[in-house]
Length: 234
Image (cartoon, rainbow, N blue to C red; front, side, top):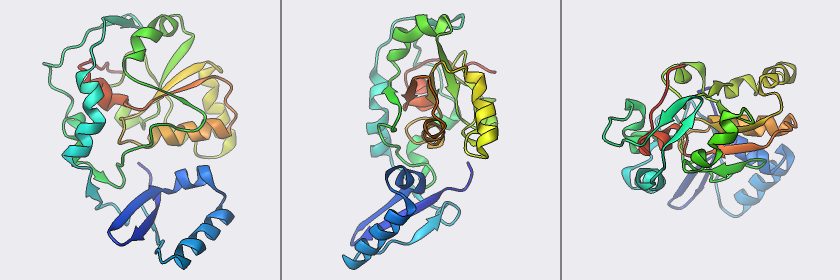
């Protein structure tokens, strides 16, 4: 991922990195500076650091990972079809290496993402069978917002790749990129609850006034693997 900026709030034993883009969702930079001054007056220290300097990070941990993955690890799904691919749960198959030990990933840059993203409706893995008919009919697109190198390693069957980086550059280029979505309703995802790529992409789509409904599949590829569902190669 590209370098991300974090605000690190400290007070005693509390040390919580907050992605800069989420702060920007909530406040303008002027208001943010006012908040910084207020927190400083209250005795908080608010250094701003880059993702590069925080690369060492702290492991998410097995307890947090277990809590975040519990639903996908236990959910039962009916058989369903996406883009001609029949999907059936099979948790006996090994997961791709990238999704075997999410608790070992370090935050930052891989942090637990919020349950919701402004401008999008959060869905879970069990919603795919319910939405399969509309996906099959082309009314809903599945959009993988990971970078191309991740996409090439395997994705949800039928997904198209629209990297979040294509939406965060010059607005003219971003508007050209979203034409491939044709204003349709979309299911947006990335690597899962520990990945910030699709939330960043959703924020960009909202700023570009995207007209289709946006569904945020927060569980992403991690949840897909935890649920015992297969990936397809692009």
